[in-house]
Structures are given as C-alpha cells and as structure tokens.
Image 1 (tube, rainbow, N blue to C red):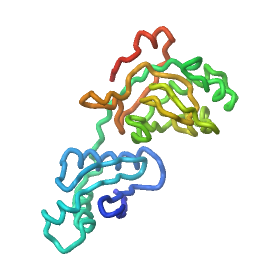
Image 2: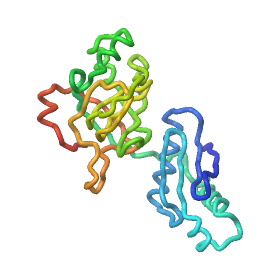
Image 3: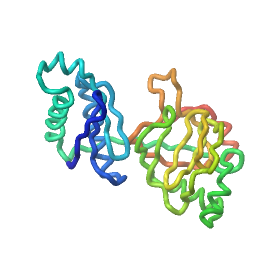
Image 4: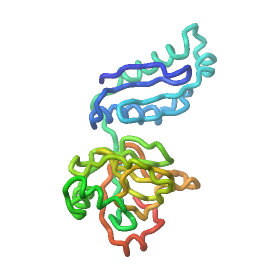
Length: 238
C-alpha cells in the first residue's frame, strides 16, 4: 500500500494514498478509515475520509500523558500509524451497502434537465437513462450534513456549474457539476445543475444515524413518476 504522511496543524495528520481519483485509491482510504473507526485508539478524535486522503484529528494532550515521550505528538502518532499501515493486508475487503435512490426527473423537480440535455446534444430521456444506469460510489460526505459526493457518472451527461448559484434548493434535489452527481440533503444554496429530486429524507438530526448515506456506499438511481414521488415523500429507506 502506497501512502505518505503529512502534518496538518498541531492536531491533525493527513494520509495521502494517491493523486488520482479512482476506486483503488479510495478503497485504501476506506480500509484505514474502517480499521481506525473499529479500533478507536484513545488518541483519535475524528476520521475524515476524502477522495484520495484521510485526515485524522488527534489529541496531543492525550499523547503527552499516555506516551510520556520527548517526541512531538505528531511523531508519536506517525509511528503508531506506520505500525497499523504496515500490518494491513491487501486482501482485506471493504464491506459496501447498496442503496437504491428513487428520483423524479425533470419538471419542477429538475429544472435544469433541459439545459443538461441541450449542453450534451441529448434528449431529456437519454440523460435520464444514462444517469439512472450508473453504478455509483459515494466517495465522501461534506458541504452540508449528509451531502454525498458521488463519483463514476458518465461524461456523456457532464455539465458545468451554474454561473449564478440558486439561493434555496429543496432537500432531496439531485444535481450535476462536471462529472460528479450529488443530492442536497437539506435546503441550502447551491450551483449544481438540478435534474431531479428524491422523496427520501437523507438527513434527520434526531435519528441515531442522522445521514441516510455513508461514504463507501454504492448507489443506484431509479426513475419514478410524480405520483410515486408523492407516495414516497419523507420516507427513509435503504
């Protein structure tokens, strides 16, 4: 496993597994993230996976007390991580959930579907078919609570961000920006091209697991009618 370690301030360390966004690199990110989350070393505060990196926030106060060494906390944590990374077997596999997301495309739910179709010299139905035929990977959550950055979208339906972001985007709205697609879990401003909306509730702060989707999940989109959207609205499924 190839990686490099970098200090990030005095309370965090960045593990970089590569420069290119691809599933092999991301699998390395998830393996280490899963192990750290399961082992929960006491010096660890938070693990933040991203496309090609993993950021670890740690407690330097705990390191000083527990290890009682003259080395800097960063040096101690680096040694701990190298021991962990060196014993990791390449055969360890990441367990992935598969989540089906129903989407009502176009119309009031996806006002930019027309633009995305024209930009790519396609019909609206062709955009829907391409978007809903993908087998996607959620690389990370960010920007807003539970917002999934979903990779693997076809270049055939890529589209640039809007020049002027919208002030209020309804929860559940599905957008495209470049070759990425994502879902706004809460009402928020945003500049992605909006092509549809899911009736599922992606974020519930009172739930024991507030976000429906997690980094590492695989996602498939299923087109539904406006009538089906209404009947499913507010549900939370996996």
